[in-house]
Length: 225
Length: 225
Image (cartoon, rainbow over all chains, first blue to last red; front, side):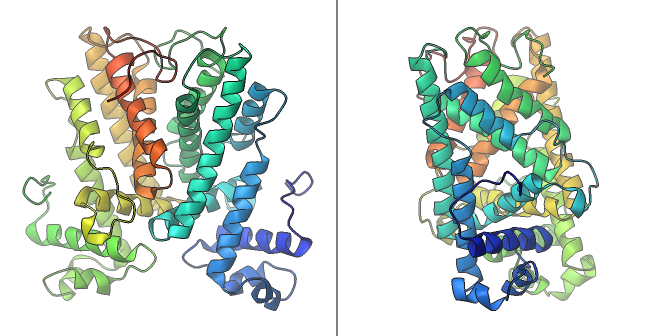
């Protein structure tokens, strides 16, 4: 991600702090995170962290804002080709050759997976903290609203069938998030693979006007993707 | 749940320890859980906890086994009426008048919701602990395999359409778990409601042989449930 990383408009120092926070979260988990172990991942002085952020909580909320900005940057509701934009977004979140390997050790896990694991863990804080609830809600709403708008544009253009665009966006994102969850937890790889097929089934066969309508489990369409 | 609680074959003491663990987890969260605060929720001596379990980790794994047994007890693959059994299971996990209220305080949250919040939080440990990964995988596989078998029985009986039963079970459970996640995190209530509709759309319109095929977002069927 370093070469083609997404620009969220952070200063060089802020970006370095966000990277250090990501690495510290990946290594220690939320429960054992401290400004000290973020400092260890940071190549400048730890005191700079305190200069920018009052405490760990403030730094983590800034990190969540950064995560939101990253997600926002992965999908553009005004893209020229809405269908291609949705597919690009899905492909970014669910790369096909990114099957998590059983027993992979820290250095083998790639940066995107680290990022998704950290978000999965931070999401638990929605149970305890209103700020997290609000920020995750903001991120989810942004993604669903954006996908809804892209779907509506393809319906208007006559490329997608007439449908409840928001409901389709909710279903698509449910399958997508479920794929991510199952990849991150590594509890049932068959479910991760099945859900990825369901995402592409909606994209390839349900949404397009010339797709074969139906649902992933009842259709005769070959699902080997 | 106390009156009609599910019997998982625990002794009275073990059951009391499981209840105390649930309450302590709900109050303190995983990160701040200790044998001491489990003891506070337990009406017998804390030393009894150490008599039964070596340490907190062992107690929590026993708690996860209890959770698995509870889930197993909520659905029976040999039930006389498979469709009714799936609906009973969905109705148990997604009660319709259990809409989480914004800003509800601890005593207002009912026991099922407490239970689901605790499971959501424990699931994060799959990232860090192979035992959790295995137990959650066991629970997920049990549920998907059971729903698959029930669907197959209805296909054989001519009540459900011909379909890939396992794929349909994966989709149904994905919508169901997504509903639970969105209810627990309270980040986007519209998504929780949309996913619940998708669960019932599969049950009412996609799976039954006399249902109207299609998908929740493209069908004309009235979705006010």
